[in-house]
Image (cartoon, rainbow, N blue to C red; front, side):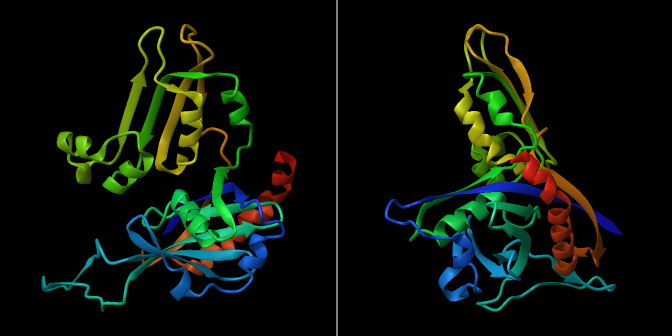
Length: 280
């Protein structure tokens, strides 16, 4: 059995404090991090960035909730019991190209999101930088296309992963209101279309740019953008130009092997590094 895995490219922007001039992330991460100092609270879980080699890191999510049960052929079941300081680990593999400020993120639905990695890196570097921003790497300049317009007439999106935490992170839908209407646990996806009244807009274009930071939650993200309230607008597929590579990886007892993921993410970088230079 094999599973298709997504690897997405991001640009890393670091806003240093004004009195910091000679800081390099590569130097900061050159040695393994101390887990006691750098295990941070991220999205209700504990997170840690574990060094694998000079470019590859494992972003670990420490979980105690939603643990599977253990059963046997006689119908006996029992819960997985963890000691007080034990957790189940979910992992995202991350490749850093420090010289070009590019990283590749392996998407794991049970692990952390890219916005949570951004939050972790901001906490990690808080003594040197105000914030870290991870922007999706675009094959074509979608931002340039959006910059031609001021307003959004229509927003159409589909969320492929439905839970309270996802809805909170995306921020468009109030999860408590949705929970009143539907059983979230039984829903495979949510698709929403929002249209402006005539001679109105539903949002400014800057708000839509912020949604691109959270694009990994969306299976669909389209807008109709216009330069005025009266204009009919242009349809733009915001997910169309993001550099995301799909690779098939063999599953080991329904789980992906970390070594295989590391091999694939390195392969992805080596394949697309020449293309990245052209995009830049």
